[in-house]
Length: 234
Image (cartoon, rainbow, N blue to C red; front, side):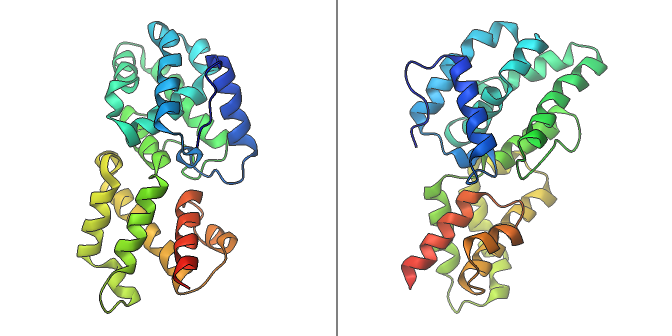
């Protein structure tokens, strides 16, 4: 959806994101805001003003949601190294360890503060931050729809067959960029979560709220798309 207006400053964007993430019950991960590509490029351009000040903690704190959102949608639209994550890594390699820890803690606290499903960075490292960004990215509505069709199109479908290696491979292919940054256990947990949402929706016939309660880390967009796909089959 179109989220930002052309007249928005970076300050306006930060306020808009804070409002969305604080009050929108249909956002469980950053990727649920579903920015259009034009929104993403607009955000990236606005962030150029802080690029020369990447070591200024006060400034970065002021616009942390804008940075987090730009990283997340880079997983959808390009390689995250083309934006700020590469600069972040370089900064962290050249500052004292306790400063680097504060830097990463700032982003970790943001995920907790706004109640995002994947919560904090498990280990305060660039690698840990990349993994959280990947989890926060999720996938687009279109990709979730394709995933539903892949699962629903299995021949002689039984619930155990949802977990066979062939299905995992097909889902992994659709996950694209984000799969590159996930630890193996996390990677399989994401795929299993997608399958559980399918089972809860198609076989258990749970309501959207019941599916969300049963899958606490699942993106709202994932659950919503699967619900609508199932409704279309009835």
